Length: 182
Picture 1 (cartoon, rainbow, N blue to C red):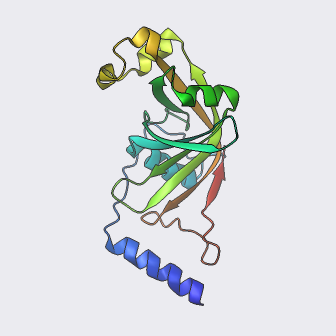
Picture 2: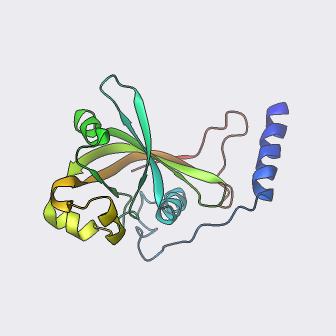
């Protein structure tokens, strides 16, 4: 009972902080009739699509997780693949090349909740992909785009989501978040 009261109390505080519903993007996600795409996937997609920044978690040579905040592009239409840009000489590039297991953590902007995506990342240096996904404000970070800039392509395998506005909350005893897979 004490755990349930604590959970309800935390939920009330979050609701009082002014949770805002994230925008829906029905024209760019998998059709809901697809058997593998559920309402939980849709809530996660909406959170990811409305977030510009993500915490990228890779593993260093010793297996120690390394977390960094990076800018991500909105997820690809029809699925949850994520693209990010980075400097080819950054530690995260070497870490992904050594161990492609990667985690992304998105927070609901201005609200209460998050999405964690677990999957595999790869480094992409294809000029066509790089040009297609280039953002103009990245020029300040990559003055020599040809030699400095590469993409990180993340493909999720599974994840979890908590969204108080959507009614997706953790288990009342364990706080385990609702999970989904691809």
